[in-house]
Length: 266
Image (cartoon, rainbow, N blue to C red):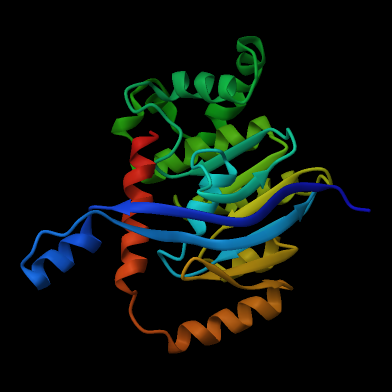
């Protein structure tokens, strides 16, 4: 029997909305609205086996980034459960995980300590992380001065060098210049070649998910539409997107809440 690395059961995550979703209603009604609650993730259940690569795709605001952050331990479940079985988990996502006033070098040390590595361990990884990141002198500047591409380069370089048991990637393979994306994809293929490493990738890139994933989950409106063979799931998703309308108010609200909460965890 295969070993399960991630178990998600009946997961529900709610946001309290006082942002754009409520503001629109205020403007339409002319009345002050009370705080509203809405579900970003609605009763999702699945398991990821040790060594499996799972991709997650869906429109903006469908809840995929919220779920990834919940697996990482940033968000708590309002209902249901998440179990990672004492595996070491690392999340790579733009806007999450770094202290903005610390330098890149200092954030490397901090990221390692949060994953349980000693200072001595991190010093052995330091040169490789800095070289791969291509940040040059910026490594000793505060990360608040970084562009999104530089931030992504540093995040990917740290996590790919430390090789945690479970890697969670939120769009980081699609940020940065073309040469760095090619280099990152090559390193990812090498990393996930290890049969004991579990990876969950959130991406809008169908080609990336086809290249890397054993299974793909399609999410919509906080729910799982389909999970299974990448070719079949992504074919159905493309057909859906060809006929899809604009994002709904609630999708916009989830996307805004994800961005706002992510900023809190910088």
